[in-house]
Length: 405
Image 1: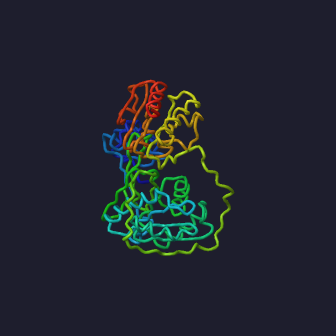
Image 2 (image 1 turned 60 degrees about the vertical axis):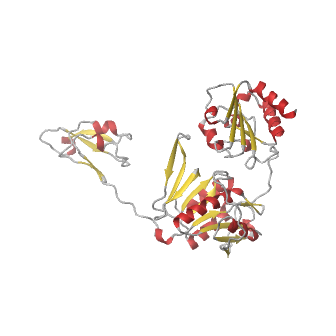
Image 3 (image 1 turned 90 degrees about the vertical axis):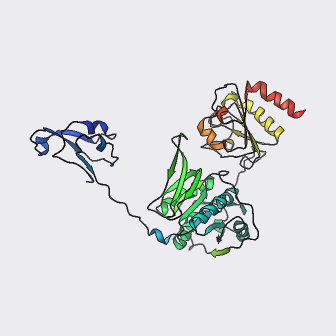
């Protein structure tokens, strides 16, 4: 066992018992354990379930606890894995913006690491989009086309990516934290036995080792945790839309396009029956320059008409807090925050939203934040560019009147 009690030193003082957060240490008589001592009649015993957290050792006044941690070895030969990959998500043959944003960030990481930035494009009839990926920073694009890949399905997309990863061995794989990315990335990471950090807000790389530093909110957004995958490859991370900025297209950039064949005759047990588009949004929330969001302060679902009217007057999209979605006042597709969309519009208007940290995570990158709330101590005012303390049912109608005039 990598942790042991040194019998000659232990006095049975119980300090280690009190320090153990998992209750796996107990005090027994030395007669029972067969470990006699000229002075001490009891001894600490560590039971099964110890995870080597180390909380007990510093509390022992006699240095009677010895912990030996085995050095972990990489499960794969790390030197065989090279280059940074970006999964270029597409829908109906059009590239999703999040992939272009990841290419922008990936370009900087690849330059620092001194390696290639490569994109992976899966679909049917999408080869002509490879040039745009090169113009946005990719050095090489792997294109795999098949009728099974036309629209996203977990199984065929996973099979395709596993085939490419095993063949080309990328050091890092970046994907968008979209509906597709979240479903796809976790399945892929499990299948290739590697780690995955979801919803990263920052990425950095060690130039020498290639270790990817993946930063994301933890404990409800109260701290920022930096996570790394030391013994597995590839390293995988997902990043939300609007976290990074894409590079401007450079048509003069040169790159390589490699066509790959779909592996075998794999088929999926699932099929797409029908696409049902969200008709509740007049303006796409993710791409909107102006967003007006409503929260619990609206009081009831009917009052969201006030938010929609203000959004129309400004030519913007309608957002909401999680509280409003959980109450059933508005569909989930409008939710902004840690468990909803991440947005970065030019103007974000928060109406009746207190501004919990989970909501701030999704919108604090907005250029200008305007908060309307009757509680002058609401957290939203801590990050607002402009704050209006007042009853939203008085303030918003006055704004609408002024806009219409």
